[in-house]
Length: 256
Ligand SMILES: C[S@@+](CC[C@H](N)C(=O)[O-])C[C@H]1O[C@@H](n2cnc3c(N)ncnc32)[C@H](O)[C@@H]1O
Image 1 (tube, protein in one colour):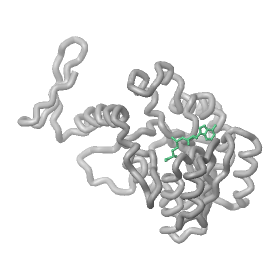
Image 2: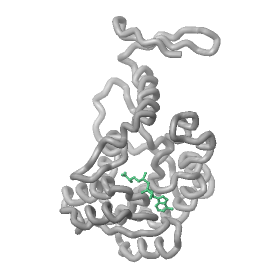
Image 3: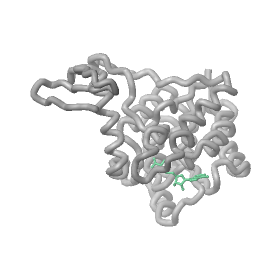
Image 4: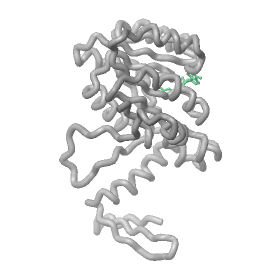
């Protein structure tokens, strides 16, 4: 249990034995603890369903968006593949970063259903020259072949998995799409936060195990060419902070 003492700027944390720990607001531990609740309350209130990027709804936590921007800047991919397009905000975001960096890259978005109003808005978008849309299941071999047709032999490729988040589906995607990832780039299995939300509203008790985080764990046991790592921050003058506040825990797999 946590008690917030605003006046003294401390948290009081009681463990199962009733012992109390005093944690100052100024410590990374206090930030991590409160963020854990903030993430959960954000899920309960659908906080991530309030943002857009260049006119398109983007269903992501802002910190995850800023962190992936840092990764894109460092990797400088020619091709960004994302499974799970929805309204297209994330596709447009990646496209905008490629354009801002002056890269001739392309974003390939795959979704099992691109709704007509979303397709229409995306086809008319200013950044359309920077992305392609493929409709179909991300684990359909024909869809994977279509994705492959956009990749040239020397293309640097980054992949984000944000479609169906069951363990089985993400594991299948990891095997299929990791083949495209180039050395020092990443495949990112988003939304591992599901493991911590199994008793939250709009969730399912099986999320404890049935989630992208566990898919990544299983994948890593078979694929030694990938390592799990939180990409290094490009700037950090904080007082001891070093972990992403994220919906994507245990998500970034780097090809070594
Ligand atoms: C969480 S939303 C994607 C959010 C989007 N990336 C963003 O940041 O705004 C998940 C999407 O995955 C799609 N989806 C579900 N199953 C899929 C599958 N088997 N293959 C491809 N897309 C799938 C859904 O149609 C939905 O649009």
